[in-house]
Length: 225
Image (tube, rainbow, N blue to C red; front, side, top):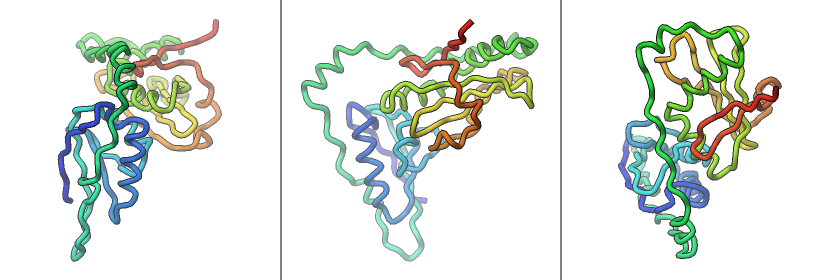
């Protein structure tokens, strides 16, 4: 599978308009093209939601890849597509006034976390699961999509069939992600369980929000007492 490493030259990265231009160019290719951040999982370059979820920023290095059918002379024209236009000087000045994003907290994986008992109280389970989520790289995915699609609705719920597992569903009108945290094995981190494009794919219980995301993509419970 031919691939090429490319450094993103646009100062705004692959967000909003640049992401749309990129995915439209990928959709015109005669073969499927994927994009991945260095060391990360590849996603379909034709999907603007998947590309936004990568949270590619200016200066990041990405890997573009495509299958080249035997006997065909397809070139990966996407690699040579013109770069998206840079922001106007006015927008650049506005960006300079914006506060710099706070760095994601480093994951906390001490040995003591592995031996703590799973809470029996549902609210404590949900809070503990969000603590684990907020130390993961998945906050970058949520924050990246939110910058283009707006704040998501978030549903956090212990799974009735697996009491130690908490499900976290992050939803926009055009996309949703479901994550799982196993509180009996917190060192295992957060697992992306599923994702989709239609909220109708979710069961009704998952569509009832009880949490919110901040500007960094960290999640916080909002339970009315």
